[in-house]
Image (tube, rainbow, N blue to C red; front, side, top):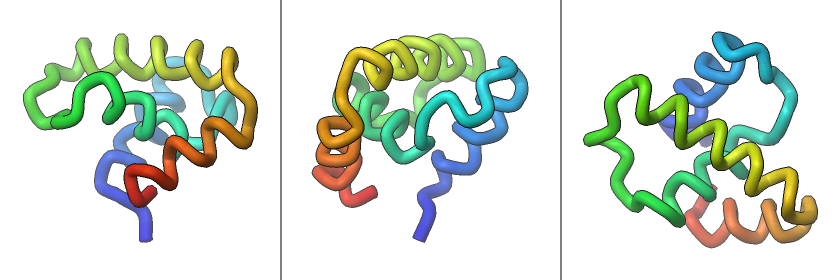
Length: 74
């Protein structure tokens, strides 16, 4: 089952023209690794964090990204 944030991440990726750049679960994993709780982020902060998470995804292997996502139950 997808998390609430997975849909928000998908929408944000579409807005910034990065659809398909990385699995939204991976992005959420990186966000949670850094922030833990995502509720307090403004829309602009959330977008910035997604862009950073995309860089983290690109610097990691698919296996590493998948393991991170799974470690958060995603």
